[in-house]
Image (cartoon, rainbow, N blue to C red; front, side):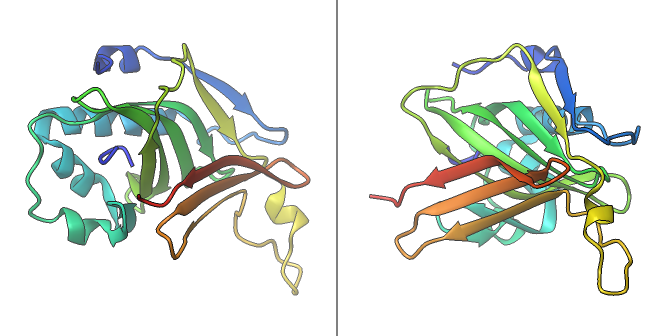
Length: 214
C-alpha cells in the first residue's frame, strides 16, 4: 500500500507524459488512461496539502479495502486517524483502463519520508458523478527501488469483449474488459491481480505477491 509502505518532487509527476498504448478495437474518445494519471496527481497533491490519511479517506469508495497489513474496510480504518507529519509520495508508472472507461488500475513506485521505498497498485472506479474513487490500495516495500520511468504507460482494454461473450438470450454482457481480484491467505500473505482483455483472451498485467509478515 502507498500509505504503509528521498521523495520525488510533485512537479516531476505533473510533467510526466502518458505513453498511450491502446489495444486493437479501441475507438472511444472518453476512454483515456490520462484520466487516471490526473486522479493520481490530484490524490498525491491532496496528501501533501491536507495530510496522508485525509487524502485516502476523501478519495476512497464506500467499499474500498486496504491492508495495514490485515485487510480492513478503508473508511472505517481511516476515520479520525491522525495524519503523519509528512505524507508518502508516489508515481504511477503503468495505467490500465477498461474499454468503457469506468474501471482502472495503476501501479508504480512510492517513497516514505524515512527513505523506505516500494511499489503500489491501486484499483479505481468511476462514480456516478464522474469522479474517480479508489476501491483497493495495496503495496509492499522493496529493497531495490523500481527504476524511474520517463513516461507513464497507458493501456486501454480491447472493446470487443461484450460482443464475444453474450448471455444466454444473446445480449452482450456488461463490460468485463478489465478484471481485478485479490486473495488473502491464512498466513497473512496476499495477492492482487489485474487482467486486461486483448481481443481474444485476458493478459495478466499485474500480479503482485506480498509475503506473510515475519
